[in-house]
Image (cartoon, rainbow, N blue to C red; front, side, top):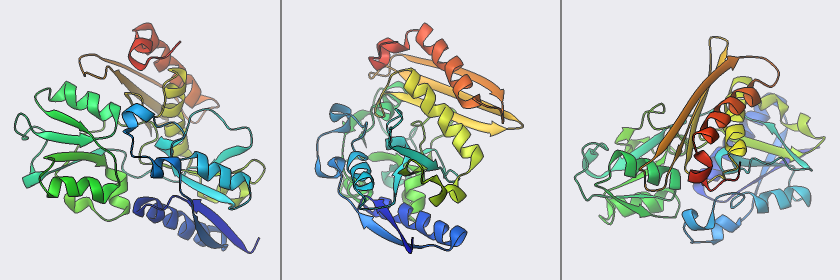
Amino acid sequence: MTTLRIGTRGSKLALAQTGMVADDLADATGVSTELVTITTHGDRSNEPLSRVGGTGLFTGALRDALLEGRCDVIVHSLKDLPTAPHDRITIAAIPAREDPRDALCARDGLTLAELPAGSRVGTGSPRRMAQLRARRPDLEVVDIRGNVDTRLGRVADGELDAVILAAAGLNRIGRTDVVTEFLDADAWPTAPGQGALGIEVRRGEEDLVAALDHAETRAAVDAERHVLALLEAGCSAPVGARAVVDAGLLLLSASVYSLDGATALTSSHATTWPEDDASRDVAASVARELLDAGAAGLTEARP
């Protein structure tokens, strides 16, 4: 293969992170790369994510392009990928994870605690909506869509007092200057897989990108995504998860929220790593505890 064609969405963030993957692949393997821009349903739709749901919204068109041979590799934000395995496509590499935290971008340098009562805070994530309502029920949570610049623009023009975005995305496009507070990942768990990229290829072609796989990141995000799958909750469900590998242990904590923020269920477990099935085992323990506590009613799942 003379040139590796890498499929990506056309947003500034998608192009930036896919460009990083292309550069890393070139450095690791010597292959030349070409970016192929693909428009997804999520790019065309303006319907709020809380209504349309996130599962596959930004991934279906990329996968179609891969299967039709229009590209050889596709790059996703891992938090957007459905948890169900695909029969013809596999996640062949998960590079080292970026900052998994959420970031508050507020007017006048304000933190979440400093925002006045009644402030309007924008997000398109049901999980972030629930966390905001739990932490600051006196704020007005506004359901928004749009790319990073569009969302930040709504704060700059005074329509919103703040927005919450993924720190990883802001890092990748060089916009951390707008962050007024990084929200602690333990107290404010983020979407399963947030901050990580998933690089997919057709089954049998894993060697194309295997050099970029990072074992500790894969273990952590696999655990987070397994617990989401076991809860039978979609990518846009009000579920936060955080897994880390530390001192030979894989530690996983997950929280499930009611959309009004009134109820939150949390479970944490650890297992030895590296061991076969460590990610699945720790996720099973966490999911079982959450389901026993009533998580299915909060995610509209059927255990």
